[in-house]
Image (cartoon, rainbow, N blue to C red; front, side, top):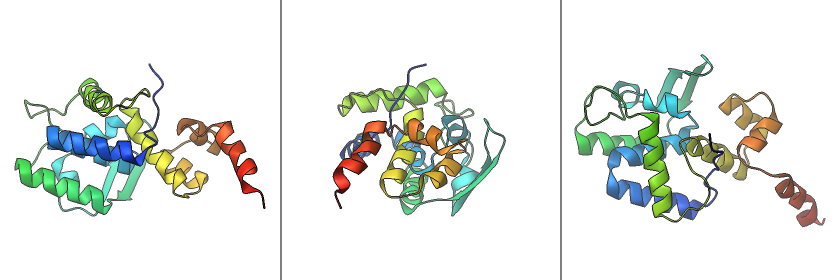
Length: 182
């Protein structure tokens, strides 16, 4: 499996959102919910309309860890969900349904969606479904959220694991010493 990176640039995130929204509103919602929730793709793909419609929070049991996860939806997520449901008229079933409708899209299809969109907007770094989760963690960190909180949100064993996971390098940490100059 290829190691993927978070999307570090807000400009690239905005370009991806614009592109995906123009292509397929379901795929746009997948991206928006992914980068704003930190959920693994296996948990994203099994969300149902009932899990999100009119909800302030998402509650689920993580497939990988078996742990309960409960978190509020941001305004960006609520708007994307509302727009998707209004545009498509979907009333029930999987949120990210395949064309046949009775199953969610596959991990492979989700990978293709994210990867093709990233290539289209000119992202050169390796991108995949895990990029969504890493992007959530990276931007939380860059916005000043303490690494131990991000560690807890992502269910990592140690802050060092989280730093490596979101792509914070030793050089970036060393730059704090260089730039501070008090």
